[in-house]
View 1 (cartoon, rainbow, N blue to C red):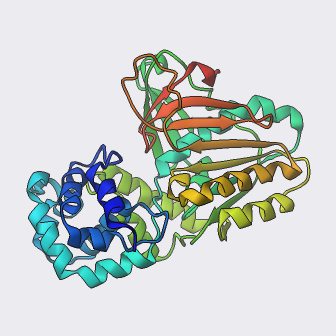
View 2: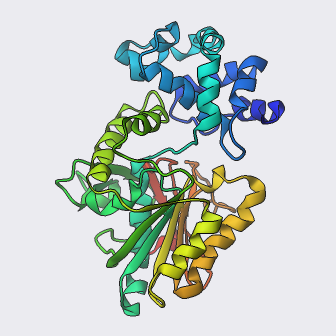
Length: 361
C-alpha cells in the first residue's frame, strides 16, 4: 500500500490532466476521500496512482457496468455527458459499490498508455540524426523502452501531417498518406523541425516492457482503451487503428525490466552498427530509486555501437524560452558523444510541438 498522503498529493495537483476536465474534477473528489485514496494506493511502486485509479474506473464503465457515474463520461454517454463538476458524489458511490473490482485491477495492472501520437516524437528524433547516421554505414537499430503493444515501433506504417505558419495552407504531409493511422500536430514558434522526409535506413526494431501487451488480445486492448481519457475520442480511434496494424504484424517485444534486458539486447546487435533508444512517459513510472540504474542501462547499449537516445519525459531544465506560452515535456536527443539537445517542447501526447533553435534542419 502506498502512503496515503503521497497519493493524496498526486490527486490534489493533477497537472497531467490538461485535456480532461472530468479527471481534473474527479481528482479533487479522490483527494478529499480517504476511502478512495486507499483504493488508489494499492498499485505497484512507481505506478502513477492517478492514471491507474482512473483507468480501473474507466475499464468497468466501458465494459458496460450500469451506474450513474457513466452519465458523466463522454466515452460512454457521448455528446450528452453531464457536466464534469457534478460527478464527485457519483464517483464516491461507484468506489464503494465496486471496491473489490477496482482494487483487483489496481493491484494487478500497469499503466501502459499507448499514445500512438508519440510516434511523431520518434520520427522527429530519427530525422534529426539522419545525416549523422548515414556516414556510419549499416542500418540504425531502434529499441523502445516501455513499448506496451509496440505501436510506436510501427512508426514507418503511419502518415504524419504538420500544421503551422511555416508549412503553408493545409500543412505538410510525411510518411504513408494511405495509412489508416494519420497523426497530426500543430507546430508553433519561429524555429523549424528537422525535415521529416529524412529517415535513416532502419534495421532491427525491438521493444522492452515489463508486461508486453498483445495487440490482438481483446482484454489487453480493453485496458489500453481504458487508459485513454474519456474526452479523447480521437485518440481512442487512432489507438484502435494502430492496434490493428500492430496485430497484423506484431513487433518483437522482450518481457522484463529494462535494467536487466537492455544490456542483453545491446550484446545481440551487430557490433559497430548504430542504435537508438526511445522512451516516452516511461521513466516517470520507474521507482525513483531505480532511475539511476534505468539511465545506466540505456547508456550500456552503447557498449557495442554508437548510441542515440531520444526521450519525451519531463520539462526542459532550464527552459531556454524567455516567455514560454506552452508548457510540456522536452523532446530530448542525446548523441553518441554524450551531448544533450532539447529539440522541442511538446504536448505530452504530441498534439503540438514548439521546436527550439537547437533542433536545426
